[in-house]
Image (cartoon, rainbow, N blue to C red; front, side, top):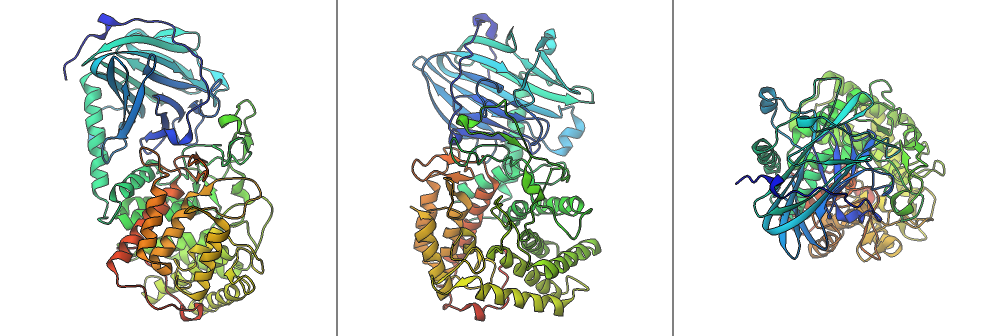
Length: 636
């Protein structure tokens, strides 16, 4: 590419700081480096970034308060149109701006590279790169960089260090902004306005460092090389996906999103990179998801294993064994990326919240809940991992058997369950199902000779006791449906998982009538709510994909499952991302974004569709009594 001296037509000025509400949730895209993540709006503004980790304090948080939160905007002056996409099979984002006079492409990413490259080259610990190139005509651009400390509670003093760029000190670390044009410090922001002609490029590198020598990368060709290197790194990773079925582009995009949510130094996987994006606009259902839920992480690992990403599974399971070592066999609901449990929930009253959705919360009180279903998800994911490694070491065997003993003793205890209500504990059918799954998988591993010392008789007795309770107290004869609470009369979407875990066939009479009741009570145009909510919220993304999967594994026809899947794809945003929930009236995304749970559901449903299309018609319907132990294996 030809290099132009931009200062020949540079015009510094005071860029307007007037900002309205943030973009819609679905109008954001994510960039990251498997340590932290930023959200970039379709208008070129980075409105969310926590550094150096997912759960660190935010330096840009305009997403939750446009007036107080920081942001970094690069956009044309005057009216413009945008279109954007990730460079194919990567997490490098390109946003195209089109004005009456010209066109420019903004490239946003966090550099990634091989370990071999990092051993031979000095690279920053944390870097975010932005490059804008005018590709046609002439276009005037305005840049405003407004960082904040502590989620926007404090402005950061910006100081100029000549050729080293701009420095902002915070705590024991410092941010550095380097660019190939001069930036004017105005109060607590840095601004510029410049006209570009075809071939001109603006380059920016924002880095963060603490307690170590600062590495400030060179711009120019070195930055362009970093783009190419990062694209190639992501594309090599994506090419390893073992999937050749329908909807490959959507599956790979979901895998790339999940990879961004994995914290590389430890192996933990966060539920989402954001906090307090509302489940209902203006409502109080705003939670911090920047932590690792054992349930979410385990389901993510199942999806990764199905795609052939064994290293990611091994990293997570190693992290899980380390994180839970102090409480084994008891498991906590969630942990930080370093395996700590001290994530006390508190509110940030100085933030207005996304579209005035208060309160804004950091930390999550679910850490103190008892959710016995997580044992089933953890054991099931570990059992799938066994297919790839062949055997467990002694420590892992001991831990798994310990989990089984805990389940055998505590499966009949009420808990808060998968949906984490804050109204007290109940006897959740899904929690019983997952306890059954834990014991079932451990017995299967024992039968295969992969676990030594399993108290098989005890586990088998308890497994059958759980089955009997689900089939009697978990079934409501009057409404002809399984129910969410034992002896109750309400349904929830988790009941769709009964056949998926092998407890009962999807085409049994009971599951057929349960599915119909869930569709009648909880479904809206192929979207599925997780339960009959007392407070308005959106349809749950993963639950909607669970309905697809139920049809695919025998609860309906292949055509029905594909039609429902295609309908759900209409709700992904323009770069293939899903939030936690979907507003059925508007199609807007709700809740934290992007959400691992939803993308896990998409991948799993796609595999089930692939498997169904390869098989003969589903087997004849079975009753629950006919299905004694049929732990469903991850698709190969």
